[in-house]
Length: 389
Ligand SMILES: [Zn+2]
Image 1 (spheres, rainbow, N blue to C red):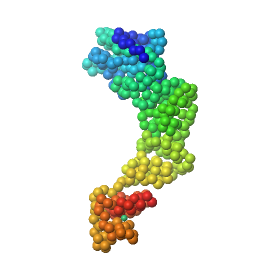
Image 2: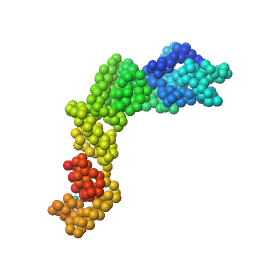
Image 3: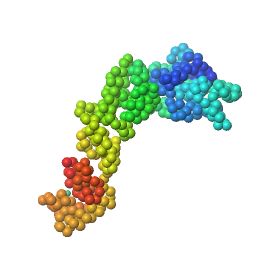
Image 4: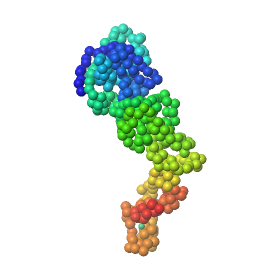
């Protein structure tokens, strides 16, 4: 790979012919059309998404004469380039020059570029950028791109995969899953955390259809000119969740719906019963992990470990231990009531507190409360045996 450092390119030249696509959230061209600002493998423009703080910071840096950092171009033809790294910064500058946002001046007044004093405009336009032009095979460039981070906001893993496996499949998949204008996003957000811009929906869709092997899947489908399987599978999962659980709870967001779909989608559920079960479990004060409620219901109300039911505290345990032990010593029996019923050597054994565990006399799942009068201490072996029943 050859690289050439260019130090004479100005903001004015880079932003000549700048086009910003509002719908797709992309900066498109610069250098009078010779520069493609957002090639396929680049991510969406995110500097405006934090209320504009990052894009304003780019302009403030220029006005103060601070360096903007290195920008990398990929030379793709005679005098034609793509931005490899620096898209966010170039788009910020282009958007500012075309009056898409304002920055605060020294008096705290909002200033659009067109309204600025001539000397300040000139300072912005004549700012020189540090540009590395790279020339090499696609694989070299991509390999290298994989190893760099864009200043300030490192690429996340899905953004890197999009870069590495760029092609018609990624383009189509991004149109569906990385487009913040997609009307389905609100619905998806009930079950998936993250944003379209940062590829979180795309990542989930790929994760589900590939059963966790996203890279493999992208590599195999890289040249596909359709995304039917990806879309169909994703919609099947979403339709299934929203059909089984008719209510939406905030704890549903970010659960492993792909795995749960695979494990449970062939069973029949009555949405009314499911909904009643969710309400009952949500109102149970002993459940510490509400995120586990959904899988607990799907699995037939069996695996209480998912719910992290509140356990007895140390004070309760030692109070019950003392009472049980005094009673046992008086009767000459073991202080584990189940050992005491047995016929082996442990029949009269007095266990230490550390050798015992607290047990619900009436199981939580049958309505037993986590309070002293429903607590008994069992030796660890018996507690484990009882817990597995
Ligand atoms: Zn025992």
